Length: 225
Length: 225
DNA sequence: ACCTGAACACCGTTCAAGT
DNA sequence: ACCTGAACACCGTTCAAGT
Image (tube, rainbow over all chains, first blue to last red; front, side):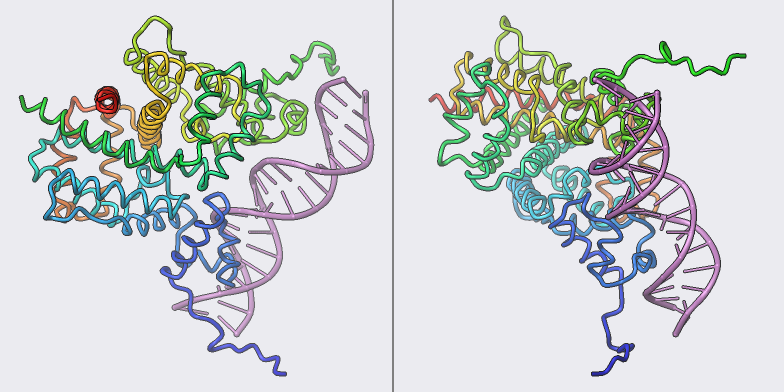
């Protein structure tokens, strides 16, 4: 029945890495707007202000979290052709964004990119350049690819629909207040396709990714002629 | 030198429409996180709680704002072929999102879509269906198009780069802390292309949009064979 | 050297009150 | 019927203090 404060071994010392890891898994479950400095401090059993020894402020924390996430994205391997490498990157990116929904919308917009971010862009650009793309074609391809990748992830993540049951529930929720017969095309689409047993929105991702890769291949060929 | 309170004609009565209009132009200038109920009330010269007679809460306000924005997007006209109509829609959408940057990320994710939203989806689906797309192909095309449109808008808006001078400043800001020679491909790309006088990121939009439209046309042709 | 507590200037929103 | 003021339970962050 000791009431002493257990001063020495009580808990692991706070480090930047521990703060980042806790922040990421906390955001994974409560989202970006649920990630508060006070809440994070609570998870770490520490006073809110203790965090400020390891991050400058909330924005700096988020910058650092985003760079950890960038580090989880696979870099294009040297061996494969550009299309295979970009396909792999697209799938890896999508997996990472699905695991860290809060990161969608932050990956391409940080004013202070970290090293994993820069290394990633350098590797992707390098892969395309060494495949023969000129800089203008790299810009076209990269813009198109990332717009698609981030745009799809944003839609998927914001809908937060994982199972067909979720989809049915969401559709009910969304359309209940309205007379669906005023929107016959939408009604047909939802009934005959979206709410059909086999349909999973996430399956659209690879289909679209392959369309985009084919489109880039053709655009490149056209630009060379 | 009257100090009377000017009770009758002092100001226009608060209406939902006036609240929405003020909220949109306020968000246009200060962004979504700058849009506070208290700040909006200040703009309208009204106590914060007066807003709650016209909107249920902040989320409801944002739902309604998004629907107003959807109403600004041009609907596909009956006359044109599907590709022209989708191209026009893509350009219109991009213009609208550029005018209302705060709306990017909200358009596809509202749990309570408004009438303009539903009407828009109904019209787009109808256009594709009447051009001969089956429902599965509509799903492919719509997912690909909107992922691209929203993804590009998100990147553009978050970078908040409008002039080449902005671009130069941002590039300096972003890369200053790092030894750029560790990222040779990125360095070449930025120096030889992005910071080149004629380059404007927004120009990538139409290029990519046309790639996507061509990709859909080919995918459709393939699916028919 | 590292952590804490109180305080400041903000939020959205509830509730009871004013006219 | 429509608007207001005070209050509550939150935020991020500054500053001075504890050990």
